Length: 58
Image 1 (cartoon, rainbow, N blue to C red):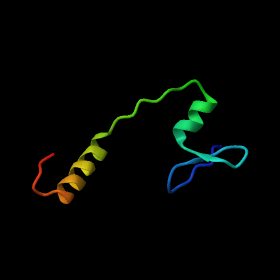
Image 2: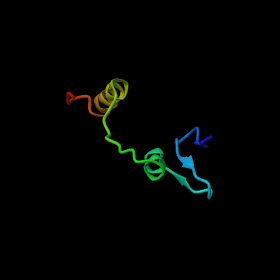
Image 3: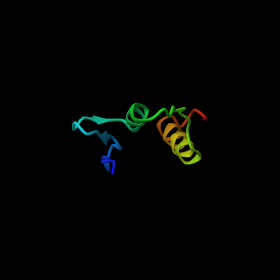
């Protein structure tokens, strides 16, 4: 079982230290990460930017 914060999604290791999911997985496997933006987050980001700057288009 991997303890993960339900709020920020940080993972607690065996010594009680909290780290990002990426850092935890990287230190416990040979996995690597490539960050992008899923369609839902992209739409939310565009909506937030449009709301903050209504005169500019995204």
